[in-house]
Image (tube, rainbow, N blue to C red; front, side):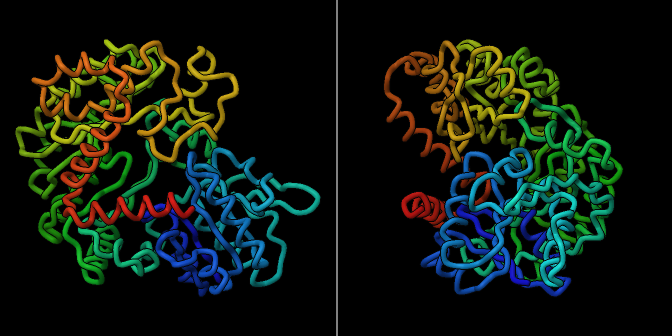
Length: 471
């Protein structure tokens, strides 16, 4: 069976290449098509003559796959499958005319069973994880148990993305060492995802050390590798696993890497291990400098003391810190938002990043915002932006000044002497100017922590802009 995976973002989806690799190992023929990477995306897909067109879908970017599937189905008799976080949380999108099947949750074995059923000409309407539409009704199948042993899956097939030179030649390659996050932050998908899989197996799982290292060796041999990003939600959560992995990584791989951490999981032994193994940067989720907002509204369950203590240890061992922060949160005021700036300054953050809250429907934060009057009555998914720093949908009393502070956030943290001036500037109606300032700072920040040269950053910006113009 031929499967065409389609997307309009210049991003390597690990979920896609895990699924594709399993399909390939069983004799099927997957391909990836990126809008902007093809002269004519629809024509390229039609010429490939796939049996299935598959879309990884994220909320805020959910219209493009639906519209693209429609265009292709006008020219080709093909089955369309939609997966990813948006399809998992909003499987009702199957009611769209161009959507035939929704894949809820992990897609490896569901897609494999679908391909095998289609190849045999047998019924595929009862496959677990799939919602299947026919002329009469929609069959809503339950999810299967989570994949317990992640090492049973073949390594993700990066060749599908690396046919595009831009992605192949990026200095940093992304790996994942496990799946699942045990925390219940209200703005994140994990607390919703865990409900989908309630009673279906262990949620947080780690791959074996041997398998992760073997995958890294393979990628370095086949494509070259300068820097590694470990994209796990909870990279340092299993201290025993981490110690074994980092000690071997140091001697067998010896490449610089960066990863995400939670402040309350940080201790000196862990930081020392990270530093000695080549970790040059970590991402710490601060989200808000106000503890009420962070812990009661966002349910991050972290104290300022824990954040500052963790950052102090990273500075001690020479590891740079990138922070993630959110503005325009329900119950936030300008004074509370300024606490976020001040905590980042106190923590000595090297690469401060901020976004505007995107209250994805079905998350706890969206329900809180709706119930307490921070969202308009007819708020829907269509109000959300593809970019999480572009649109402010939360109606707080200081909305304009908080939005302006978000755009000047990088400057305020990196140059604290400017903070008194910025406190005045946020009240001025200069949003277009602040947007330009934000994009300059964002681009500089992104290039620095990703260790990208100017050409790569400009190329990525151009590819993204081209897709917006054409599609």
